Length: 400
Image (cartoon, rainbow, N blue to C red; front, top):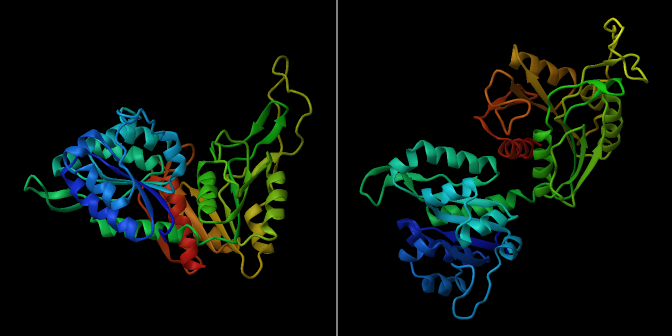
């Protein structure tokens, strides 16, 4: 799965840098083209000559070559790479990555990289356990970086605990699994709804909700990365989606508009994920003119039910189509979600609760439980919405 891939191997200044030679060799053996970028401190632990010999490419450490003046473009490197692996990643470099401190060639390339980034921490156990390290790793996860967890064992300090860099063969296996997974939706059409709907009261007011669309947009990007053709039916949000050629965005405002666009896209969809927070009600008679406050009593607004998009698509679902719903609950979460799954003919439902801190509207994180038709439930810890999107598609692929 790594054959022909362009991989940047970033090496920072820790004793685990000696493992990077084996990692470089294994990546090359798997068919990858490897470009090593070292921090100045990394060269104190392993010679650039060793790594250039193993990869067949000169090692980059500075912004330009002193004797020739040749410029090394971090932007070009970021565009060239299919993946960036930083192993070992010291506490110092992790902190710089998390906070955008671009004071060396490796960190500037990291900030320019368009490809997925894999970070393999390595440090002493007390540094690993420090709150600042935990916070910085949390930041990197929220950016969508993949953290290859450190292992427990004997460390260079001769203490025993968590902080050993993952073994090179396991890092290669992690990359191979990532790239194999990211072709598993090739040839499939995935339709996703995202964001809120706005139901007009008058030209300047509406009934809506706090949905940011972040979860739906993360799902769209994950599906596209896995090779799918994606139709993203989006309510009004400020969230933006990457300019991926496989993502087509259909912008709507109201529930009626979202139903029409979703129904059209669902006709030839293999998978539909209904992540939008659709308003349940709309004003029966929206005013064509702004309702004035002065000299008037508060208006009485009669509401009517909006169409139920999930139930409608559940009735239209054909053999071979898979329909996934979302349920945001505050009480009796599991029972309400399971009931919704059954009533609306869904194949699975993703439950999140407003009681969970860091989950729900407007956040960059989510905590979910996936419930299948057979009643099986799988819960996860609080993760970035990008990681949650990965978990949801892993579950879809495994089940369907």
